[in-house]
Image (cartoon, rainbow, N blue to C red):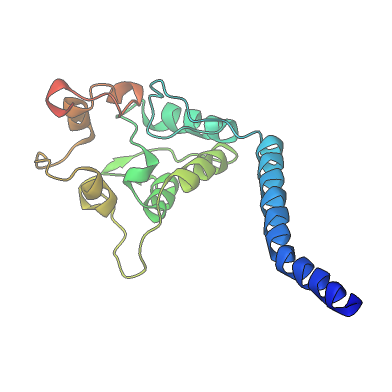
Amino acid sequence: MRNKIKLKRRSNRQTRSPFFLLLLILLWSLAMGWGLATITNAQPVPTEEIGTVDVVPERYQLGQELYLENCARCHSGIPPAVLPTQTWQRVIQDSQHYGVTIKPLIDPARLIVWQYLQVFSRSQLKEEEIPYRISESRYFKALHPQVKLPRPLELSSCAGCHIGANEYNFRKLSAEWQ
């Protein structure tokens, strides 16, 4: 009789152990998630208008400022996501800038701008040609579905729909696009 009671106790422990193990894993996961969120100081995305297309972390803000200082003084600065990373790499190194000779950025400013552009642009598919013009970029086309774009497309035409484009705010749209 004692052996039967011992066996019964053992079998009860064995059927409970998966439940307790799952509970332990759940509690451990919750604790680790909370700890990682606290350590990384995760911040919620602001709900007010952020102006630019992306929220730019502090470590890339200088790159964005240098980009705008050097590029947006002659034309509207466009969000890096509009062109692939490979195009940006060519643009910031080339002194022939769309038919105009410019003085290319020099280090360290070039490296700081490059880090910003590299993080916020997109990669190009291997089989695709690297677009040099915005109108050739599949990203630009994807961001503007069903939009009849003027030919030739010029950066100054961005402000027609993006009324905040001159302030690097591509979220602010004209009334017809809201």
